[in-house]
Length: 65
Image 1 (tube, one colour):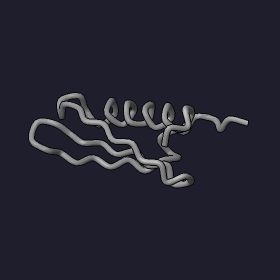
Image 2 (cartoon, rainbow, N blue to C red):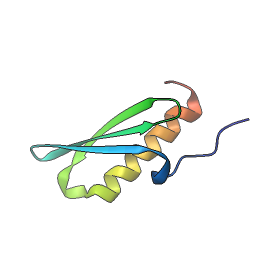
Image 3 (spheres, helix red, strand yellow):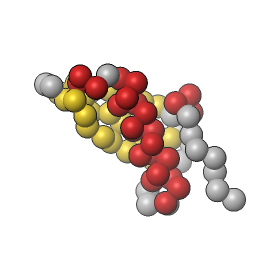
């Protein structure tokens, strides 16, 4: 049975500013699956966190971790 999508409360999200971009890591603490995205710092933390969470849910759904 597939696992329901994770929400921001279910994952660890880390922001690392690197010049004008931000590196965002999203980690599922249950499976230790980690995904990383990069985006412009001007996008804001909410947008970057949502995109990282979407990628994590995609990876978990596809089983490509």
